[in-house]
Image 1 (cartoon, rainbow, N blue to C red):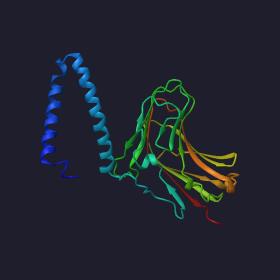
Image 2 (tube, helix red, strand yellow):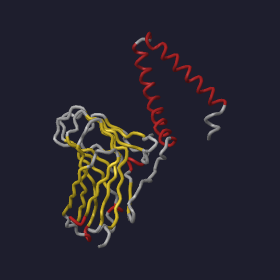
Image 3 (cartoon, helix red, strand yellow):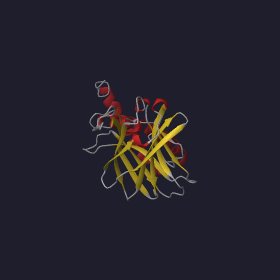
Image 4 (tube, helix red, strand yellow):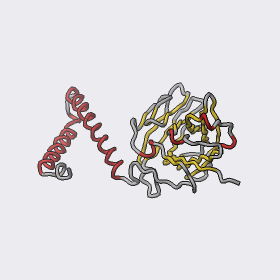
Length: 257
């Protein structure tokens, strides 16, 4: 494969393509509008393919490696998970003027009640030397006329298999913010027709934060647990940028006394 993209014919073709598009760019300022409009459409189609190639290449060639599920887990953890969005490329990778219920991959959904959306949400490639997650999520909020903004992260079925009231569920996150902001995490566990909820505020005085949910404080019916999800709730997000460089979960049984 390396030979096929670096052979003599391929290098000649690449040189001709670069020369052609360079010449067209030089002549664009004096080109008639009909020709320029046609050329713009072709350039956009080419750019879409180039952007797709670059996104995949960056994902595979940049550390940390795509698909990495490596992170520090508490001792005696019996389940640990990094959601898809922070582990590998998702579709769509980003949305401008994001509407409520916009999904990013299969597990993350945006919710808000803005009349006019001025939110931009985009998956980004992590490149910091201390990053463990391959990808992050950047959210830019400009004018915000709603009353709530949240990201819902659906946990996989394995998260609730064997889940007991003796379990502690931990969420770790790496957060970057332009300005101080309150972020709350709410664990929801559905059991039969009922849903237990535990809320914790993220301690954002450090970039790496951790919260734990103690299921002993719930009335969860262990025999009827069906699914679980986490809401990340952003308070007063107007004119702010938040980057979630990592979000991961684990659970462990509480030590017996």
